[in-house]
Image (cartoon, rainbow, N blue to C red; front, top):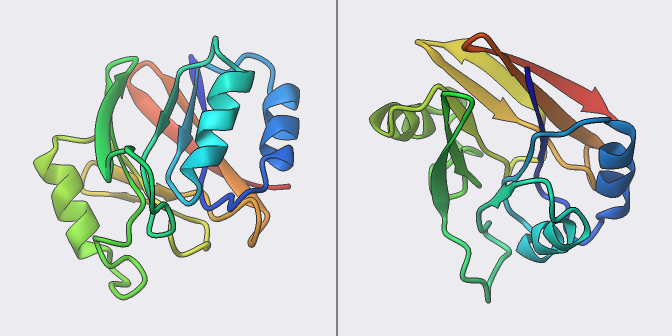
Length: 156
């Protein structure tokens, strides 16, 4: 089983992320879905042995981080984006995001931007927005086991 911690929209507040990582036990990867890439870089520095994947958000102005990436963890293809370019605040069905994730061949799509936690299992793609550690006081934990994805939204 692989354990992935998912954060987004930390906006300079990494203390909670550090507390979560420290309490989580073995963590196989960390995903940060943007807004603030500096936070993701700091976490990567603090935890150099944990792979950390991150993208830029609408508040990440001077970063070289990509707007979206696709990674594979334990055979599961994960599409990561912040969501502002996919209009996630305006499309309640997340149609654009779903289409991009499907085009990427993703099993799991991670996004942020709304600060509202969300999970959906639809058409073979799991969508997850961890919310915001700063504003909604939430994060997500994904577990991959035997080719299946299990996602939980957790409160701080």
